[in-house]
Image 1 (cartoon, rainbow, N blue to C red):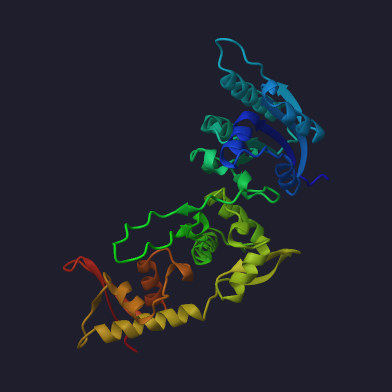
Image 2 (cartoon, rainbow, N blue to C red; image 1 turned 90 degrees about the vertical axis):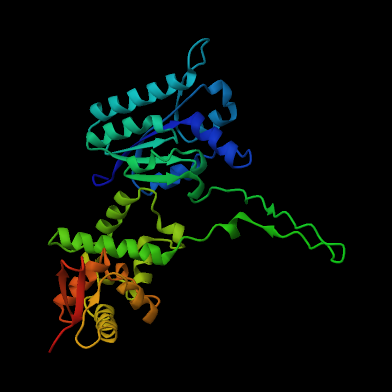
Length: 356
């Protein structure tokens, strides 16, 4: 238990409940998926929800059964009930951060950007902050401020209603042609699935950056934390993987990364392949430069990437861990595949085949 994170949970209940009802077809808010998600992250020692509970009678019973302390913010004539609840919640969170040093993580359940300064202050006090909000009612300013942000809609156990199908307007039929059947297009068909290849590029760039900025090995847990710092809404489940380890094994099977035994069981070391695809890519670059260079001439860097993609459409320097095409060409020059020099007259880098 000494190594468990102690979590304090604060719910801006009106924001959550109304967000769920507005965007989930009138369905009531369910606290259980949030409780389950936090149980996986540590021990919740404080649970508080803020609202005028005369508006949420049924919800009050549900929260009481889950041992949530209900903080009453009654509505008063001529006063802003919402601001009163927000201020009380922020004051209580900061007070708890000072008085309960053993609490390491604060969970702020709201989509309201007004809580962004609270998040900044808690992180300044060396507290980890997890945000929870309904996706369509969460301000774009709030998730990047948190260490991790969980969309309520994506939590295990949340029953999200299927999006309503939209009918496209049929063209007016000519007298000689029968009217076509209306085409039904669902939002799921319109919205493309999250691209695992795009995730692979981001992950490779992160591993390369961590390897370049530290002499230590990159573990899976450290990599996951780095990905969450870049995008607090990141979750491997959005890509169809049950765990982060399963995602890494999938990428390792496709030679995107390499895994080795780490310092702890279940926390492997993650590295980028040193040979293989990189050497093939360097060879591709050299062959393209040889084909384009005439009689000992040079090839300009500008437009060269398009030539490589004509020869190999799936080429991407980012999948190899390079942040730019220039960085990839410099690595190829260091590896002896090509020669690279800056030409002031051309205002561009010029590449020539490496002479034996």
